[in-house]
Length: 333
Image (cartoon, rainbow, N blue to C red; front, side):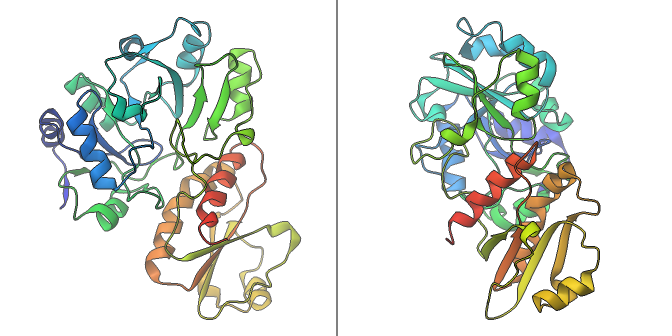
């Protein structure tokens, strides 16, 4: 158990087929050689992840795509996405080549590929020269980690090498864009919005909402229950002003924007001011996204009887935040 500062330790472990934790700009990833079936099996073992939940393959740049996927049917869209959003938080789904083991794709004929932005992850990719499968570095179904300390708390007894790259700058998992079919569609909303993608490719992408829940997902993040805290999570719409949930015990409340008066909210909700938290001073949705998972993990570790969290508007990156919170609360509904 522990963290290491020397990236060479992580590279040596990956070459031996071991699993290491690496930072990305989205969340911390549990990484292993995506071309090594035994190494990928270790990811599933460490996370206690079901084998039917596929993984994302991380590459250094767009030139790597042709090694692992067939882009012949969507060649016009791929370079546009790569030029506009890579390296960055967009994953593209393409028809896979046989070099990708079936365990990575849960037996599907498609593979999800992403080019991460974080310099540590990129440095590792440059030196190992093979792609890395890397789901979030947390026990399956739990809140994703955006700091090395969170990985240590939840997986520290299962993993030896955790590279600390600081807090993730984005804080939400990547947008997943399916380019393997007739029409581009969002399979998981993320930091890059459907509107931004549509503008780049010159075609409206299909909204994820029509197909976003699945018990047999072909990409990560489609399960109804996911990103869940251990503490009961209850969502509310701050606009309606209804805070009449009755809980026995101590409750924490998370707002997107700092309330104008914490004292007034404390009185209205009948909870101590110390139990009121916010994700952004001014309600900036990018800041809300960056701080969401870290705040949920922090409060979950305290031992509250319940956590109440405000739902954001379903527009822009708020769509992705809304998606994560809805799945996180499904466990308790």
